[in-house]
Length: 493
Image: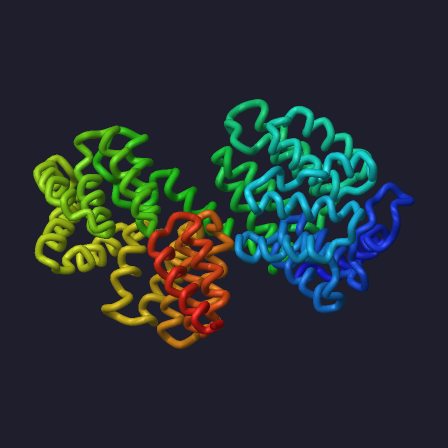
């Protein structure tokens, strides 16, 4: 948990307005008996301590099951779309008619159903309650979502200066960091606001984490690693700290060309990016998207031999047998122009797809040893190990890959299934949930959580996750959801 002294001091300040009326320009919230827990959760969430925030809101819900603030803001701090929906809907169901917070709950439910702005209502309420620093943050996000960035910055700066709120300065800094060239003067405008955040909240690890990200984007890896490590030292329970430190160290190694990775043979950077995207999508079981990405790589570079082989491999997963032979023939014929190791990969894929062998798995093992920093090759060895060497070897390799490159979230999926294979359902659920929270926009993590709930004999929750995955385009989940829905209907009847 966060530093308890800091949380206590924040509680006292925040709880003053959460349980009260708007006499001091702050909006009253529907917390019931859970005002302290709601205050702690709001503060943690706005300092990007989402795990702490969720825990505090859960304490509030345990204390008062009618704490609308707890449900609403736990949903905002939750990445899992299934849980987010349920929390928003519960918040609205419990909300009192005519209460200002009910407006926010309604907007959230409308948004989760595909209508309107998630933060609709915040701007109007902030005008009515101008001393509410949390409404100010929501008002900024509402304006930002409407592409009113200049107006949002003016509003946010005024609020940050008047309310002396560090998290508002942090939001302001990120308005100059999101999708902006790190070499531009505009990007550099973020730095003074991060420094102000650090000045106002010197005990917040997230402030140092923001400073580290500022330098990471600029390619100053030494400073990035330094500040990520300082964030971890300041708060060892700050979950982003160790992960971001490892990621910065990994990116630094790759950027300085010291990373020991297999470089694919193509002179077209866009083609290589499309190829890497295809592999990422392949490992997330987004086969249709992977096929499109490999096709894009081929369109950008018609001599990209390995892209043809990987497209053929993806066609095999899709069951498009008619597309495989031509791609394999082209890949093999072009392999003479590729590197020796790429040629070996191409021929292994061709051999396996034609003869039903597993030479690609064996080759991936040796290539992963040779290219020790290559996340894609490392993942192939994890994937290949599932049936050949058992769960313990999968976990050993998966943990090593995740420690090296914490952004390689598909490996969490492998860990989850390995734990399920060992009968360790508690850890399996934690890994699947972590993957969902790290990759909430990918369908496969939800499908895996559905499998987990089936293993737990919880068909109702399993169906929720299969339906979410199906909604996001994973075809395998469609049949699972249909079958499970039919089964549950029979049981009800």
